Image 1: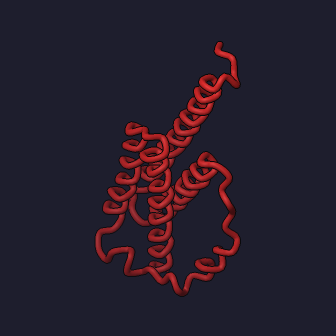
Image 2: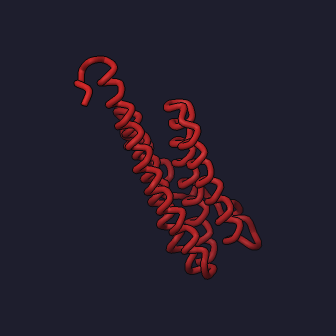
Length: 153
């Protein structure tokens, strides 16, 4: 079971960081919003710091067995097309949030206090999703006002 738990932790640490990285690039290069990009990067680095507190011996990557993962490659044919940047953003932030929930639950079995660390990170991800969506809505509203499609209030 120990190796299985390590595989779960490894997979979800990767999933959380990957989801944040996509969101970070959208903030940095899509919105050119340095503040939002910095918050996403800080959260991603917080996950790495929590991982270091969780692992005290053998690195989790040594438990990785991607070729044996029954859900690893079969999922590709079901990938959805993302309609907008907001769709892409939400899919990746929710992927991160779900992974953080798994990390919260599994890490609590391994080392006291680590579950709470991942819980705090998960709630930061919720706040970031809200703030990012608010930024996208505001940007859309500003574009509509500038184009004359929406009256100024």
